[in-house]
Length: 378
Image (cartoon, rainbow, N blue to C red; front, side, top):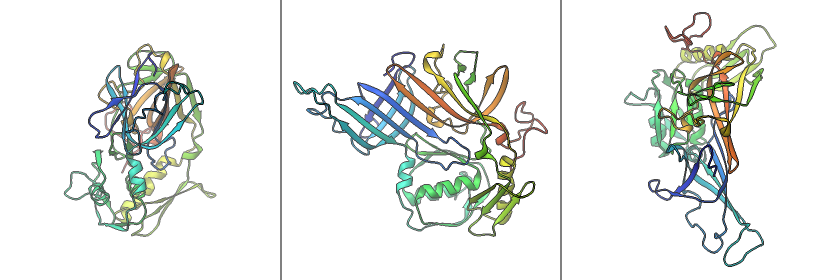
């Protein structure tokens, strides 16, 4: 793996406790989070390929579906991501001498815990109406965890709105996406368990981005993309509530650009608030930041996992940071990220939305408490 500027370690474990590092890893590809605000939440995924010269005669028998895989920033001893093997394939080359296949390669596909949620059917499991707050005696996330037998680990759910009764009739991941849509939540994957942050989560990363400043707290980027964000522009929002009437909110005049969402809102009033919330996010056409790419070798002090402060790479979706480009400072929220690494180097790509698409207002905050600029939540 890259020895400069960073050393990424891939390791496996059969018990998620004791990990063994793999050698001869030639490339790593990792994807976390989302690329657009309206994308459903999907499992995070990693693929890596390694030279496997002795694998035919002495295979690593633990590299099978279900085995735990960990990606670590070895130099700073920071775990970046965890998952389980979903598929393994071997490419055997022709030269084979003395029990060595110099052109043999092993490719391993790994998925986050959300993959288990997606494969497991809910079998019409009945979830009664209850609050979304994880501090209550009953909450919908705990019920989903109990019904599925799967874990929801790191959570930050302080909202008091009710989550409506629902009979989960497809996969448990479908239910988690319903929950997220109903509360404007962010679902994270890559710790071995799901993590959930609701819309009012306030978290800022200790690392920012810049086109000139290059140090441990400002990582320099090479490619930047501004788009019209047409995927984030709607002038009509329709909320399907399952238990209550359909709610429709519009901005401007027809013809409308329509976003229709399924939710499990706990009341008609809550669904109406939710429709207004989404309309406030999407009803303005704008040109904004959507993507930046950073090269590891360009950093004076490498910090592209954005983890200098106790954060792990899988956890960054939903966190805010800022970016300076041509002297202008932009405040953004990270939706997701991808990483590509080879022995020659590595690149990180971050998928972003401008803070204009996050309708938060925090009193006295110099960035998110500006009257006439920031929007109220619900």
